Image (cartoon, rainbow, N blue to C red; front, side, top):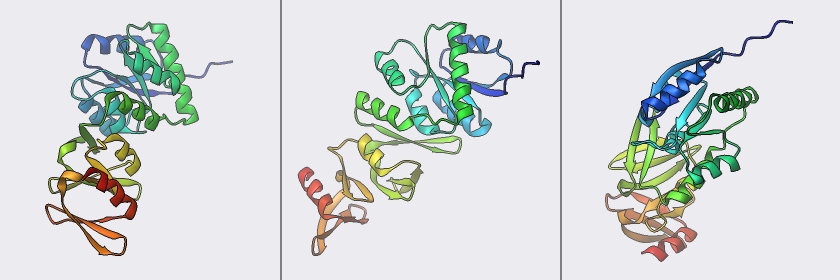
Length: 251
């Protein structure tokens, strides 16, 4: 009985070290049906590759300059399954094992990569989603509040320093970041944004708004138990009763 050929797999390799990329490429060469469609030396190149090439799988280094592996994951979302590669990092390894995400601990063997590739094929076949939110939550707990927010716009990446964000507004399945007169949409929940930013600076004033308190000019009462926050640029945002109680603790 003839053996069926493995399903074709288009792969992107992301690592800032050329030798590390070469090792993954060499190990993958022995697997029929696997095509390396791009090699990326940093996270920005990885985001561009996902947008332009729509690969089936990514081998992604965790520790990289410019953008970390976790930041790349945040930007690409569920666009492509990932196998992480990392030097020994006790936190990262624990997070991957807890959430059943495959990883390769450097230096790894050809056999270990083959095992990861097999698991990736199984995940793809079952259409099993990666637990992105859980991984990102653990990353934030370890690293503290975000100092910047990354927003993908096609193959481009906008980098917003947290202190330049005026407010964040929930818009259906997205959130809108207002910063320096512009708005940036991101596929994320307002609760997730609230959990990632500094609680000493950003406060949930309403179910649909998260506000940078440094932008407040004043808060006015305009109806019973209803208030409005007036920002320095004249923007007016609703403040709920619960939101005002939270806001009052920081003002």
